[in-house]
Length: 272
Image 1 (cartoon, rainbow, N blue to C red):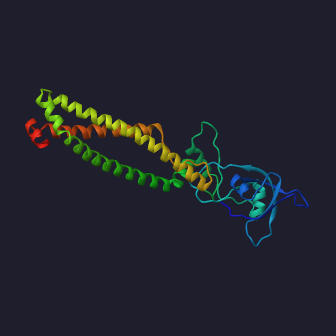
Image 2: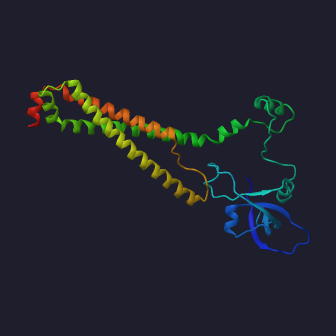
């Protein structure tokens, strides 16, 4: 990554010779009202003389979470022009090598590292893994928060179901006294809990969809990027709905079994 200073941007600047070309990122072009054909003067050091470049194109960089939040702007040069601008020809920090189809990346890396000294080759998977460690830590942190939230919500759901079923003591006592079996009463309570879980899943999915869109809208406008900050995939929805139904059925079954262990007359007296 090279830091450059943008000195001036004008159209039709008189020059002794045609300037070299440069491609400008869309955000930078919008900020300084640059168009193709304009001339910009760039320098890697404010104390050094500026070198004119002609804007040959405006590009939209690929969204990258590692750089999107920094607020940096990007320029793309022809390699000889960049070397002349920096005053350091034949010097690079990093470059990529594409292997021919069918070749193993590890074998290519091993062969390149045996050719000469002064550099080190790595597979792209290793580079991506090293640059993604921060996001891996954040992902694990979010997973831990999600696990704690699920456990807390399960306990809360169980308490709610216990209270709701306790309120149905009179109904359970009447059904038992008129001859309805304990299994049938149990199934009725579990079915009611399942229905509530399904309704809650639908409402929760709707809230998650709204929250996802609001998050992406707010942060994409804040950082002027197309990067997607929040995902709501069918797999996540399926997992959430399935977990909700399982927790709802489990809480309803536990609450109903706890209630039905009490004799009908005792339920009647407690309801009265």
